[in-house]
Each structure stands twice: as structure tokens, then as C-alpha cells.
Length: 241
Image 1 (cartoon, rainbow, N blue to C red):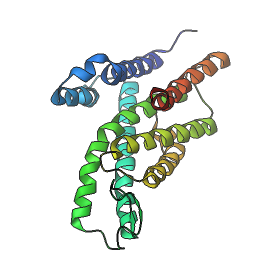
Image 2 (tube, one colour; image 1 turned 90 degrees about the vertical axis):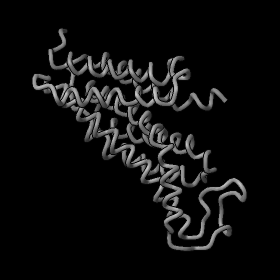
Image 3 (cartoon, rainbow, N blue to C red; image 1 turned 180 degrees about the vertical axis):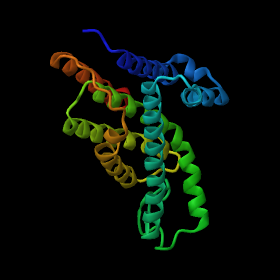
Image 4 (cartoon, rainbow, N blue to C red; image 1 turned 90 degrees about the horizontal axis):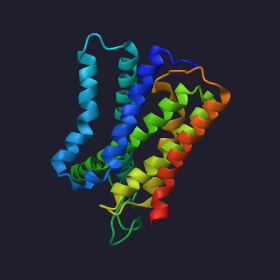
């Protein structure tokens, strides 16, 4: 079955972003780059988005794809980073120490109080460390949901898988950056709940709504492979250690 031209554009954009993710985050050269070079590599998709919007003859399918990508990334990064900062402030305000190695997180180590500027500044500076990780996780979620929508995954299943993967990746993102401040597990879990809601109600709505007329077998195999890729990302930290 020939692939329509609009779907070929969508598949080309999706494949290009997949290759970029693999090269940027899993390639051996990534670990040899200096900090400035890494940031430039991270900004390449943003530069591509700007070029797409500037070019007048860009296919509408490509513009829709890049718009969905941009909306997914900024909303996901905002949800995780802002949610984590607000939770840290809320926990501190009610008298629960949400971070610290010595003494560890828990009750009785801090008095209930209104958030002070020093706390807000400290937690916000930590969130800057969280943003690059969220950027990576957001790309993974966008690629999965774009693939799921392209293969006409039923919406109830897309929401279920989106919520599961978004919750797991969000907790990993906060845990990966949280070692810096010895963050409490309860904060990580709470962000996971926020990610669950985001994956169920927001992610499928803002993902590119392309649909490819493939056979049921081909769509099932494609969805299974996409799901296995994200399951592998969730399982990798446990298998490695």
C-alpha cells in the first residue's frame, strides 16, 4: 500500500527526530562533548523548528508536526519542573523536610512556615538541572505518542500507555536530578502522579493527529515495538545497576 505524500512527510520528520535522539543521548560521542557543545546539540531541534516556521513553502504537515513537538516539550518541562518546585515548597511549608542528606527527609526537622525567597531561589536553581533531563524525556514521550497516533491506536489505550510512560519517565527525571539535593521519595512519587494525569489528559490531545491506513497486524506490531522501546528505557536503570 503506497504511503500518501503527507504521511511520508510526517514519517520523515518522526524518523529524523528518532535519529537525533539516538545520536544526541546514546551515541558515544555525547560523553566526549564539552558543555557548550552539548547545549548546541540539544538546541538543534529548536533551530529546526525556527527554520520550519520561517520557510513559507513548508508543508502544512511538517508545520503541524513541529508545532505539536514544541507544545509537548514546553508543557512537559513546565509540568515536571514547576510541579517539583511547588511540591518542595509545599512540603517545607507544612513542616516536612523534602530534601537533605543529613538529617534525612522527614517530619520534625523543619518548622511549618511560609516559603521564603531563599527557598524559592534554591529550589528554582535546582530545577535548572532538571530541565535538560525533562527535555530528553519529553522527546521520548512525543515520539511514542506521535507513533501511536500515526498507527491509529485507540484513544483509551493511548491515554493508558501515555499516562504510564509519562509517570515513569517523570519520576526518573526527578530522581536523576534529585540526588543533587537528596530529594525525598515522596516528592518523586507526587511528580509521578502529576505525570500520570499529564499523560492521560494532555499528551494525547496535543500530539500530532496523523493516521496511516495500515493493516491491523502492521499497526499492532508497530505499537508493540514503540511500547517495548519505552519499557526498555524504564527498565534500563534497574538492569544497569
